[in-house]
Amino acid sequence: MVLVVDIGNTNIVIGVYNGDNIVGSWRMVTRSEKTSDEYAIFILNLLNYNNISQKDIKSAIVSSVVPNVMHSFENALKKYFSIEPIIVGPGIKTGITISTDNPREVGSDRIVGLVAAYHMYGGPLIVIDFGTATTYDVLSDKGEFKYGITSPGIQISADALWQKTAQLPSVEIKKPSSILAKNTVTSIQAGLVYGYIGQVEYIVKKIKEEMNIDQMKVVATGGLGRIISDETDVIDVYDSQLLFKGLKIIHDKNIKSN
Image 1 (cartoon, rainbow, N blue to C red):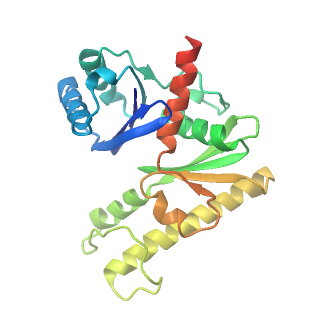
Image 2: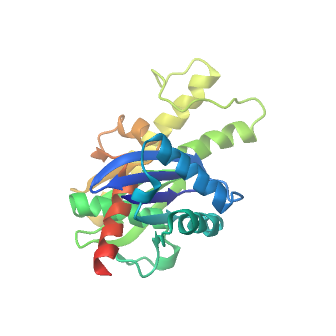
Image 3: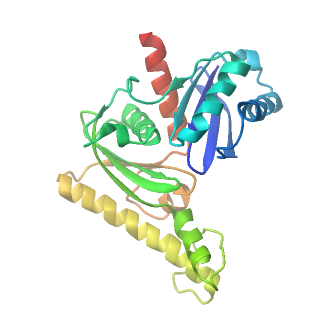
C-alpha cells in the first residue's frame, strides 16, 4: 500500500492506495508545531480505525507547500514506518514540463493537480484548485505548464470580511436561494458565492481568449470547489481526489524509474 500526503496551508490530507484503488482518506489541520511523534500517532490511529495494518504501508509520497512541517512529517514516516518518502519537488519525474519564469516558485500541489488532469484528459486544459488560495493553471497539449493565476480563496475572502469589519458575522459558505438578499447573512453568502462564480467564468473566458483556444477542458478540485462547479457550465469536471490521483501517478513514475 502507498501513503499519499498533500500538506496544504490549511489542511494536511492523507490517503492510502491499495494498487490503483484508494481505500481511505482523512484530513487534519496543518500545524507546524506538531512533533514527528504526534504526526505518527495521528496516522497510526487512522489506519488502525480503518483496519489498515501499519506493516502494509510500503512506500509514501508527500507534496507540501508548508516547509516548516516537512522535517517533523518526514521523520514520522522514517521513524514509525521505516519509509524514505518521495518528496514532490525538483528532480522528480512528473511527465509534464514546467516553463514558468521561475519553476522553483511553483507550488508542488499545483504540479500534482496538473499531472493528474493531464494524465486523465490530455491537454490543453485548465486546472482550478479551490484551496486556501484559488489557482488557475494552464497546460498545453504537449504537457507544458507556462501560465498560472492566483486569487484569494473563498474561505480567505469570507474570513477577511468578519475579521476586518466590526459588525459582519462569520457565515457558512453556501449559495443562497437568490442573489437578492434580505439579511446580512444571505447578503454575505450571495456576494461570496455569486461573486466567485463570476470570477471563475471571467478568468476561464480570458484564458481561452488570450490563448486563442476555445476548446480547453476545465478540471476543478479543492474542498469548496463543489459549490462553484455545481453552479457554472465553464467547469467540465470536478474531482475532489485529483491531488491524490496525481500523487499516485508521480509515485509510480518514480518507483518504476529507480
